Length: 314
Image (cartoon, rainbow, N blue to C red):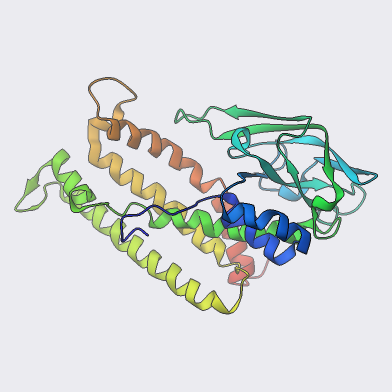
């Protein structure tokens, strides 16, 4: 899609995260109900995972779901819920048994964000955007049929979805391809720091750009190779943590290079002295700092790589 200068037809949590999980764990009724709407882009989904006291230790979550007839009554809260204020439905982790080990009492459930008792409040970030929310549930009712998999067996489903999420987040490490030669970062750099004999005048910046492009190309090829090898299995492997870790570092590095290129023009927040693309780059640079936190912190990914990929001793 990038090579032909076209946008992806649909980007959503439904496509990249929930859809694959429903294909693997969902009932036939759930597949028929949700998958057609996901692929048509009719439903926007958000993810109810992290809580104020349960981030990296996700399994310690406390949002409760108690069965009442044919419905679960849900109480609790989530944090950093991306686009919750704009979403139609949520896939949510809830505790259905508080008396067993924490990993064993979690269930995976779907429900409508317009349900009575749901409240989503956007959180303003340092970049000025507000795509993340605090989300509260007070006596929210969800049909028993919306439980994915078995009750208290939601943790394996949660982990599988996280692998799909990490593959999705890793993709940002291959972003930044220019739409046309004049938008190439080398040509943009020449406008800001000048050129000498056809090259970027600043040798240090020239080296940073070259290294970043080489790493991006190698990473892109590795992702393609991994995708080819995975065609025999629909399930992602723990290697998704490697891709998530490296992809987010690449994206953060890309914005660091762009800020180096902008120099003083990267210090603007608003005003006539700055171009829109300069202001946008500064805000995106600030936003990129969250890449190594969202979707599982870099520290968590390194632990998973050590244990699940390299099989190092504890």
